[in-house]
Amino acid sequence: MMNDKIALGVLFGGASTEYAVSLSSAAAVIRELDRSKYDLTLIGITRDGRWLRYFGGEDDIRDDRWAAHPGCVTAFLSPDRSRKGLFELAGTEYRFTPLDAVFPVLHGRNGEDGTLQGLLELADLPFVGCGSLSSAVCMDKAVAKTLVEAAGVRVPAAATLTAAQWAAGERGGIDRLAYPVYVKPARSGSSIGITKAHGPAELEAGIAEALRHDDKLVVETHVEGVEIGCAVLGGTELFAGELDEIELSGGFFDHDEKYSLRTSSIHLPARIGKAKTDEARETALRVYRALGCSGYARVDLFLAADGTLYFNEVNTIPGFTPASRYPNMMRAAGLTFPDLLDRLVEEALRGRPAVPARLTAL
Ligand SMILES: Nc1ncnc2c1ncn2[C@@H]1O[C@H](COP(=O)(O)OP(=O)(O)O)[C@@H](O)[C@H]1O
Ligand SMILES: [Mg+2]
Image 1 (cartoon, rainbow, N blue to C red):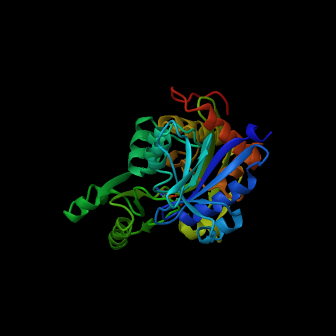
Image 2: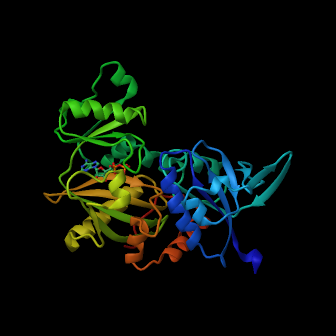
């Protein structure tokens, strides 16, 4: 029956450097969401932050032709709890579409970073993924590392520097770090603005580059080893997917490599043996809880050559194409892409747990 369906708003695009990645993720999510269960309302956000309701298909989202559709109409979510849904403006008229839940398929700033999540919390609209605090904390690599370290998980040696400190000639402890180091905008994603420096000249250039993307940066010592990912789902009860492993052949997992896999490959499951797999999964779940995650997230770790696990970062809205790591790790654990989407919406409708998540199932 029509009115048994869940009215689900799907947000895509976003005023973020990861706009294009969001379009690929959203096209896949929209294609796979079961129309017998969901009435979809599609809401696109342009690179410059305009909100438009979109009535077309997912191919034109993926190919970034969606905003040119003549049917697009200015629309925004109401923060008013008595009007939970989408307002569309047509001249001086408005139209209101109620929503039961929202699925933000946005990556990076202004979408994955707690800002949008704050709006949805204000509106008391259930939504897929981590809440505002957790999203904001996970977006900021400096803040996330501080909290994770306090929870007893190792983090690579790192230093934080603000644009103001750098301009004042301060170096914030970066000279104590052993090369090679990574220079990262504190709030980055898809490796945008990240460089690897092998000496002082590259470090200076890397800092200038990172400061083009954020006014705060992290300099971090290279961990020699492999990168491991863990897909986590849930609020009170947690479910972890198979671990994956990124095999690099030189360089690092930069933007091109992430979306081309030209010289790198992803192994699923990770080839690290049962004991390390269990330890990495435990560590990922500890990180997830320490950062107050709920809904879902991908926790990324490094397994150093000496067997030590280090925290790298949490992606609260990881890539979501059918080839992406998070859905693949869940598929390897027995959850198909459409089933995964159902589980995520169920989690959203169940609401965020009042108490921190506890470990009940692996
Ligand atoms: N400390 C580190 N040791 C080894 N490799 C690293 C380190 N930090 C970053 N990298 C490399 O850089 C990539 C991007 O860094 P990451 O912090 O994950 O940023 P993003 O949020 O853009 O994914 C990682 O996937 C990894 O290949
Ligand atoms: Mg990463």
